[in-house]
Image (cartoon, rainbow, N blue to C red; front, side, top):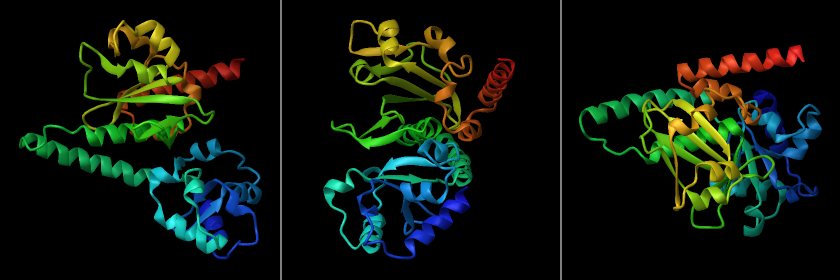
Length: 282
């Protein structure tokens, strides 16, 4: 699939399309590098089997806003191909479907784990918040096909599902959860449709995942204050390792299995097998 798309993007980028209306498109696919793109609509025409972004997400592709990617090369490509500048207004509407190299990312995770352990042993590293948070968000984005968009607030970027449902994504980076639980801001949960918590172990692998309807989370776990504490004892039955209720929201199973801890991967694989068996029996 990737070789096919890379080839079509290179083909499209090899000539200008100033006389077409493709410049009006807001969804583009990135090819083999930052100099090759094509409108998603053209890809769908070239390959009738590709009708939605979710099909590409199942193959490892990720959907990101151009603002998030900061691809200055895209603006140059756009001007070259369509013979017109990309306005700031249109730039905010552009989204890019791109395919990260999961193998290289996995290798990098292993290397980072080794480096972090050395720095930790020598008391150089005492706070690894930024990397685990961003890695955990990348896991959530890849596995559930979430789309990051510039926030209207000062938060940075918000996450949305394919159906434009807002997801609040929280990252917990520890091998075990504190007795107090994972802390979430009630106001942020209230503004979202789904609440996702990625439990990332200290070796940077996913040790579990929690996905709740935000309304349910508010009703069931919110107290009187501004903070929600999700204690393991209260939410255990909703973990992906125990419940397959939200498995239908998984867009990229291979990424989930690749970055899950061995224990989580085994449990999830068993549940997928059970789901397939039930489908065959129905």
